[in-house]
Structure formats: structure tokens, C-alpha cells
Length: 104
Image (cartoon, rainbow, N blue to C red; front, side, top):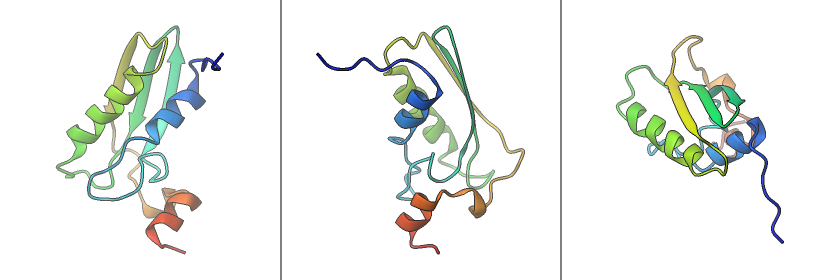
């Protein structure tokens, strides 16, 4: 019998690894774009940012994140807010993300 994933922050973060900025071949988690994840009784609230405030792909990326989270079992409602405080910097990229981008 397959293991059923319990809805929690780790489950949401793992799902968000499937969401990519179409202009950068690294997922939003490893880019450091996810600021917070809150899970409560089937409701998921995510605060994320973009690599630049004027990023034209922002609404697309947020929508992809919302859709991916909605696919998780037991999710009732999803809210993804794009925020710009604090501003994103390349220092927020994970070690895995830096390796994918060829950054030391």
C-alpha cells in the first residue's frame, strides 16, 4: 500500500520543487523564492517573492505554485501571496540551486 503523505510544510515545500521560473531552470524553492508556508486544517498560505519586482512571469509563477499545491491530498484552500519585502538576492539560492546554475 502506498504511503499517504500528510499535509504539512514539508509536503508543500516538496510540491513547490515542481514549480519553475520559465526563465531560470531552477525550481522556486532552490531559487530561495519561498519565504513562508503555513498549513492549517487543509488551508495553505504561501508567501513568495520573485527575482525582480517587475518580473513579467510573476503571475504565471504564482499561479503554477497555487495549482501545484492544490494537487496535494487534503488541501482545501490555497493562497499564494507575492511579496517583495525583504527583497530577493542571489544569496537566497540554496546550494543545490547554485550547483544547477553553475554558481560557486
